[in-house]
Each structure stands twice: as C-alpha cells, then as structure tokens.
Length: 114
Length: 112
Image 1 (cartoon, rainbow over the protein chains, first blue to last red):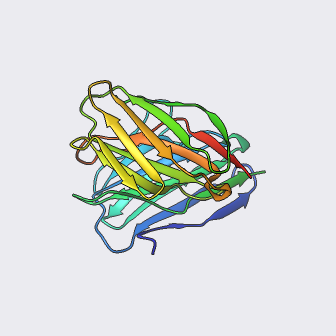
Image 2: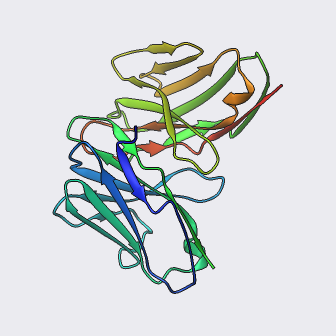
C-alpha cells in the first residue's frame, strides 16, 4: 500500500486562486520531503527540499514566494501555489524519505489553472 | 550538483525483443541508482535499483548494470511485452537526505 499520501489528486481552478497540496507520510517519520514538478512529456524536476521544522531549500529558478512550503511535523508537508496562473499548470509530486529508508512518492496532483 | 543524462529519449521495439536504456551521472559520490516506470498521469513506480557496491542486479526480465568507473548504468528489459510500454526514468543520489536526480526519460513503445 501507499506509504506517502498526497491530496488532492486533481485540481482545476481559476487564475489567481491559491492551491494547497498536502503530502503525508503514513507509517514513518519523514525527516525530509521533496517537491517535484513534471510538465507534460518532461522529467521530474526538483522544486524544493523540505526539512521538518526549518525553512525549505528551493532550487534555482523556483520562486519561494510563489511556492510556499510548510513542513510543520514529521509526517506532513504542504505546498501552496499562490496566485496560480496557467503556466503553473503541471503535475506536482511529493516524495518523503525517512532517516535510513528509500524515497517514497505520492500519487501526484494534477493542477490545471484556467 | 548531480547531473543525469539518459538515452535514448524514445525507443520502439518489437514484442519479444530486448530494450536497453542507458544513463550517465556526474557526481562520483552518488551511490544509489533506481529505475522508475511511469504510466500516463501516474506517479513513478520503482522497478529495480542498484547500489554502488554491486555491478549487476537482475529481477526476472529486468536487469540493471553499473559501471562506477565510467559513471554509467543501464536498464535491460528482455522479452518485451506491450505492457512494458511506458516512460522509464533513471535517477541517482548519494547518501543521506539528498533528493533523487532524474534523467529526462525514455518513452518505450513495444509493438505487438
């Protein structure tokens, strides 16, 4: 069964809306979570690394004020896409890693901004 | 940081033939090399992985080889079937809480 739960799986909303995506590790404590973005027919690109209790580390070119990441507990990280625009439409996938374990992926969130 | 190159970007094979996908990585500290299969609209699924202390690993029709010196690793699928059609990604990472770095993917089509 899934060890990382990601919600929602699908979001369709108007331009200017803010969208929150949740990523939960179900049966382990995730010291670190990663957020990836995948555009159609492209690879998974790392957006940011989220460590519990500290600020996220963003990859070059990813706007931290637009993609707000909160990792308030060892089992939950959230990504908020603020004031989303059509170019933010993408497949967002979270991933969690425990202290010694492999990297587990959520089911992804398909975000469509009209 | 790590950079992973993957080839080819598309691959078509006849059912029953073998398929080979190759990747190279840049960071000599990388020690974990998984391969993922992704179907349209779904998350990547781990199909096989290899660590740097091993040169080859096999699981039924799927095998992975690793050449640490050359920083190459490859995925081999034998006796391909139409259900093997998908996008395959290689990835690399080093120890600790570092993220996987993915190759650009290979779209495999198995023609019946």
